[in-house]
Amino acid sequence: MLIDVHCHLDMCEKPEEILNEAKKKDIMITSAAVNEKTNESLIAWKHPNLKICLGLYPIDGLKCGNDEIDEIINRIRKHRADVWGIGEVGIDYKESVDDEEHERQEKIFRKFVSLAIELDKPIVVHSRKAEEECIEILEELGAKKVIMHCFSGSMKLVDRIINNGWILSIPANVSFSQHFQNVVSRTPLKQLMCETDSPYLSPEKTWPNTPLNVEYSYKKIAEIKKTSLKDVEKELEKNYYSLS
Image 1 (cartoon, one colour):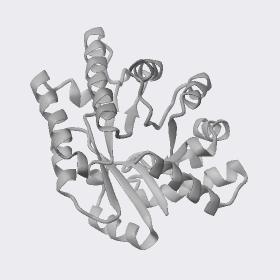
Image 2 (cartoon, one colour):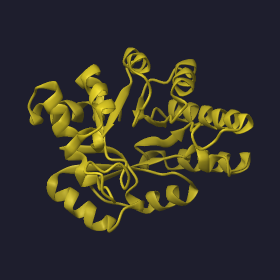
Image 3 (cartoon, helix red, strand yellow):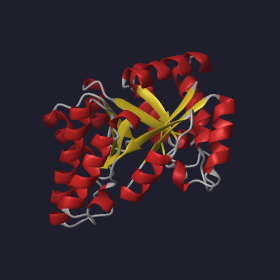
Image 4 (tube, helix red, strand yellow):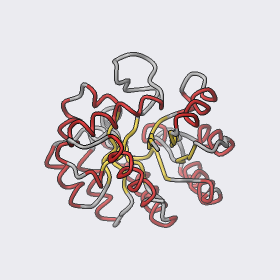
């Protein structure tokens, strides 16, 4: 089985067709929410090849009051049996440059890390331009089931993630990204997973991307690790279920 551990299926064209094709190809799709609207839509979506992560994208979080954020957290608690993970959550300093907004993002992220620990769910972390800050908060709060989504930080920080026993998910644009190829080279197979971040990050620099393209990540990992595609599939499937 191939697994796309992080995408936004609701943003993709013809998502039902993608799900049906994923079932034929034995691809498990894990779709992440970014706000309350997508949390609601994912909860209602049922398919044997779909698992969901509920959360709040960091920039969307800045638009929410404290009561709204607490409502989102309580909704996730209520639907914990339907939820595979908490995400997409984190900190984004690229889209937010104000110190007050930075502090608020960090406070919101702490709430979701605590929720993931409480529910014993994996947390899918967005850490753009805030890689070290996210790692420090995760370490401080003692998070164990962590997936660093599309991690763009330094190799020194990659080593820190590896030492913490966390997962690095590799997007399909690893097909041409030297950074992600370096991450794969550095990271043990037992700490890798694959993602597409669809409809973004196409492996062929086109729009849109699709979860069906997760095979690009698998093939590149197999090439870099000098092992068979089947062995990569088996190992990453183990990684996925070890977080469940």
